[in-house]
Amino acid sequence: MNLIIEASLSEPPSEISCFRDVTLYGKSFVFEDVVLSCEKGTRSIYWNWLKSHGAHDFISYLALETESIDGVLMHSEKGDFTIDRITSFNLNKIISYLQSFRRL
Image (tube, rainbow, N blue to C red; front, side, top):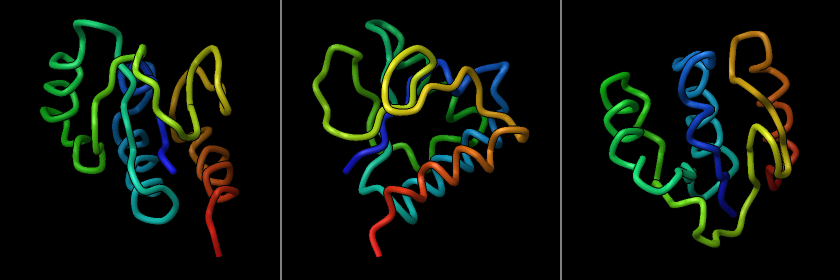
């Protein structure tokens, strides 16, 4: 199963260190892959942003929003988990939600 994160959740007002923590936890303990969902024409911008801030380590793939990928969608407006930003204030809530997909 994949964790699909809307690319805009990696940029401010989200905290990049918390975004990296979410991808680290998701990739290491719950999901096979972490996929960043980007609008057309923005993949290289997001890749450079993540790489320059050291948050690209656990991203497996940058997909276009139009690509069909099965998994759990974390998005600001739609999907399985709707959230407007990833910060230290909601990091525990996000990790708890991801834990619910962990297989024992």
